[in-house]
Length: 178
Image 1 (tube, rainbow, N blue to C red):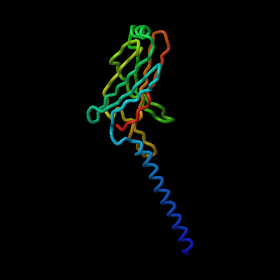
Image 2: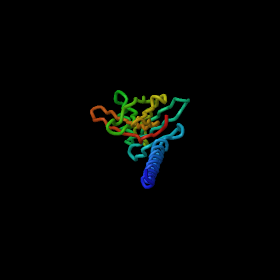
Image 3: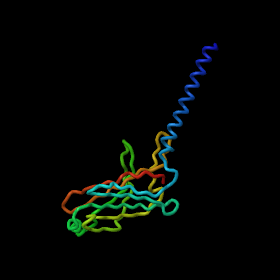
Image 4: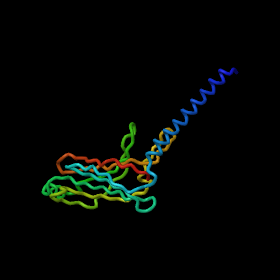
């Protein structure tokens, strides 16, 4: 082999090594950098002036979490009370795992109603709560052999009114390592 071809081969290997290192660094930043170091309690609220939806998830024991959803639908107290007085629960709450196309968001579980009220300030308010294990909250994705070890979830609250169409309200997305 000539000195010129050895030099070209050496440059080629050096460039390839550099690209491999940069690619590995980029993948590590995307996968590991987006993952919280440990599970933390937190709350995400939409903060809307008409509707405020909050999703809170916090650990209670190792591997177990409380999922709490709350809503204030700021309508008048009388209208809110009329909805409460209808038969059945006026709200249905479901937690969804966020997944990209082509999978789409996936329903995970329902959250039962724990408190319901009508007031002039908050309108129609509801609280919903359930305990879930980390495995039940985990929506890991496997992308080409790389497991992304965190979950992005959101709550969807549906207002069910007799004789009217269902109205849905979504919380902000909640990203956590479960």
